[in-house]
Length: 159
Length: 159
Image (cartoon, rainbow over all chains, first blue to last red; front, side, top):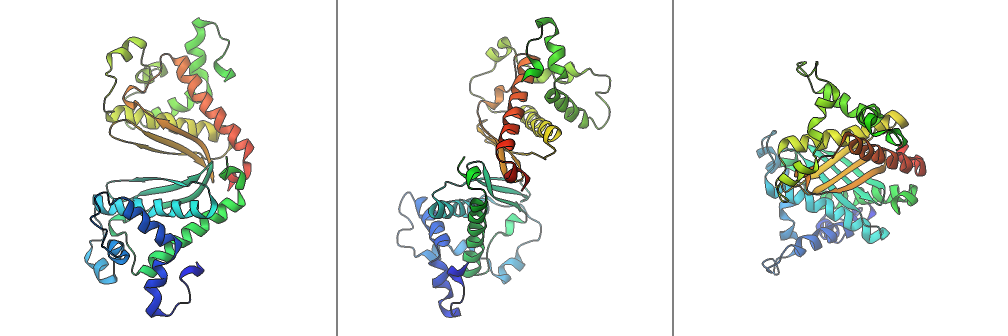
């Protein structure tokens, strides 16, 4: 949480991009760049599709089927949460996601025998964040909550 | 486990059908019978598609895509495991299953924050059991293992 808080607005993006969660996200995206096509691309460009401004959101129909791109972003996003959890706890947190073709579903992240994150997803076709800051904050919050759960149930998480 | 053990072979089917796991399975199947089409059907007939004899298995190609019927049976099967867990512990165990179109995947059953069952699935297109007894034993074993996990981590299961 405190990673991205209390930064003057002008440096907000920079601070967001420096959070460990966003760094994990960028690392995962770059890992998929098998042919080096994105090598010269700066991080903000790589993450551009995760940003959906209010204006853009207004243009997306309220009901819609998610396309493969947005499902892929959702998958990378929750995998990044798992990776950030692993960085801070040493425990591998693997995601399992099930989304209906209508964009409704559920995601679980488990470490050992512990469910570290369980979330109902809806309106997946509109998945995105208004700014880099909200992207970083939302991800960091999920990571923090998961780590809090691991601290409460360390034995189940290590089982 | 002991539900179906040490019964003379002749009564084997009857004993298998009387296990709490198979009863849960039958109850779930009957719950889907919205129009009463199966009302006169005895339990063994309802469960017939879960039985794949050695001869039948030999006729199924080794590699194949699962059809919707077998995916439905798999879903009902693991939901029955969850239901049997609930009957014995009072804790709702909800399944989450993800199967690729090639019949490879994973199923998780969670109770509270505890993963009570985690299983990799493969060759799903050949899902089935040789006899009612093996069906009952396999399901009962999953239920017993899940309950053992709940007993080890009661707090996480009740979270």
